[in-house]
Image 1 (cartoon, rainbow, N blue to C red):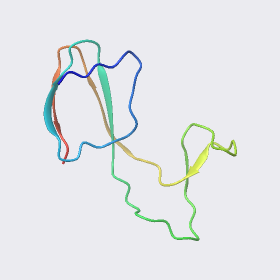
Image 2: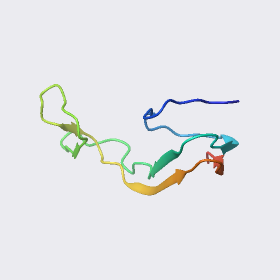
Image 3: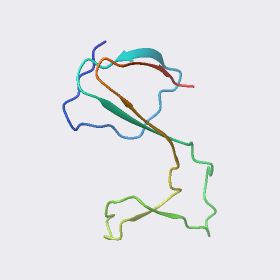
Image 4: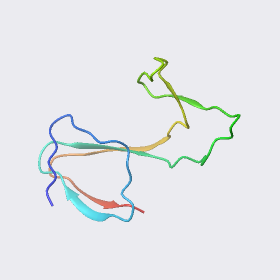
Length: 88
């Protein structure tokens, strides 16, 4: 399978559950940021957690309810680089 993205394109945060494949960068580079899985499953009704998500919400405040994601790694796959994706 060949996947082509134009310069500057990106994807939303997602997982690769049960995925296993090798990937080779034929042109350009790819930046990957990994995040820890959120620890809280549900918020108590009286509890409010806010995280600065860098964009404005419908009220223009720039904050959203939820737990802020913790970055655990950041990698760059460069031209001709090969990596293995293992979605455990």
